[in-house]
Image (cartoon, rainbow, N blue to C red; front, top):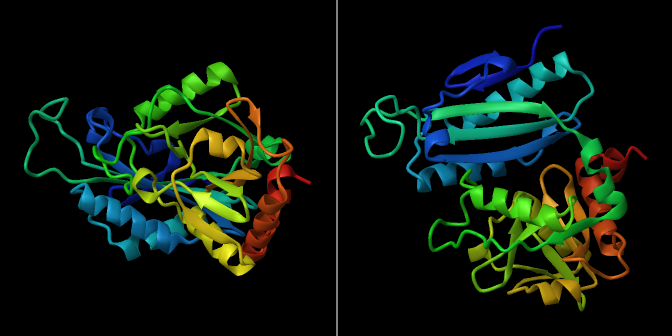
Length: 303
């Protein structure tokens, strides 16, 4: 039956052998950008948009992978094709990871050789839909930890990167309030930004509202939501959002690549709306299902 494949620095290798050196700058300095997409019916979703964002992140962070955008897309398709033969009937998550390379002369950033080459990784994993079942049936409890989101004045929020130690700490803080909580980060002024893996939206007075772009990574899933809302005739705006605004909204939800759109039913213990996944959330999700030709709700819940 064979083993799943990954791609590392120009070669397709067994998935179990896809490993980084301990002195890779992605580990030592967190000097790494990343992206993620998934398949629907075995086809990578909006892969061109994800790869474009990945390479914009590379350009901003002075990372120059040898592989072109076109080659990156082709590698993804080959991995999905092969790994689908090894594990038929699965949908796949596709991970991209590009680092500053391997620094063999010093375990840090004080001495960097001139001939560093980027480390380039692609790998896939079967989507674990069962992990998100309760999100669709019960909703998400968002908790705002004390740790604030990394300000865009320090590092552009437009980069999808792996400098996420503050999110690790924040997630642990949120879990103290509720082991199943999702950390929702405030900026240094107390406005809502995003979670560790999704954007955040509220619905109020007939409008869907997103935090302003300087504080968030503009998600591909968020882009999909804006397109669906346009077709529905629902106004979409960007504004500063506080926890007060979220608690007093009619609905809230998080757009994200793995499960597309998750309903938020509580924030900091306060119930949003009637405390159940909302009508607008489900209508957006059903329209998304028609776009990808798959019932997303049933996929997550096994209904």
